[in-house]
Length: 174
Image 1 (cartoon, rainbow, N blue to C red):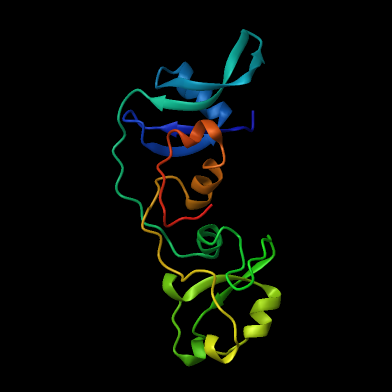
Image 2: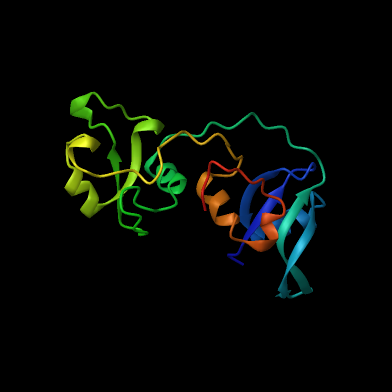
């Protein structure tokens, strides 16, 4: 029951990711329809039910445009948990200011990158041209702001069924 379910608005726009239990409640209350179910069914006292993977709300939910907040998690997600100096993929990463704070660097999307501990120590408080290090790609604020969190969006892009409903954006690499 801890499986995640993609929740779509009535116009098929991704709205949220919830647990299967919450999705089934929405279906039983008549608020949503199951668009895709997993292969195995859920067994309950009253019988078996399809285990939803994607549900669509029957009525449209108006939401304000979300704001993509700058945080460690969103920088890691933007950089796909990859060191932007050496290309190492790891869960033990740090955030590096390309232009260090002591040189006037700000804490903004365009100045923050994901770095492994080794590269962050090597670069230290120096400017890039002083270290002979190069960025794999220049940091930028993602243009797409998903209603679902950036990390859930990127994880969802790996789910073959969900991929049908999640828009593709070229400024996010996967």
